[in-house]
Length: 185
Ligand code: 5GP
Image (tube, rainbow, N blue to C red; front, side):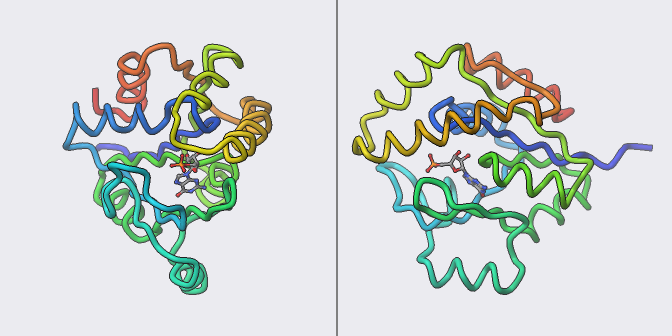
């Protein structure tokens, strides 16, 4: 009898490369189902509504919270982010492995509400490398970068709360390790 797949949560500091890893997985394994979050942040160039995020305004986000439609949600660097609950539960019920790419506050909420979820921490090879990646993205003004670095310090300190740590030395390697954890490789 096949086991009900676990929910896998990928978390780690902003800039560590979570979304690059997820984009790589999406490309190499289009059959994988990845949860699409809702956010009040504005789209970055190239980001598509319904693919990278569902982009909503504050009122719409409020409604999702009020209606209990979010599995977890958090404020990150001034914007709100949340995971739509129904799609995640439906996929798990149907035996489809689910991957969430969310921040630390969200990972903690998932741990509370779904204790059998597997929490994976994606760490940078070093603090210097994380600063370089966050600064080098070139898409955010300095005050936003500073807020993200502050958040990153807090997130790095939480590594021990996670079940597994993967170090992002190479996107391909992390993607392979994640596939193994998801049970699809
Ligand atoms: P970004 O703005 O760079 O796309 O994402 C900022 C942070 O929000 C990242 O750490 C990302 O993992 C996190 N994030 C994205 N979606 C969600 C979500 O649905 N819930 C939570 N809690 N965090 C999220």
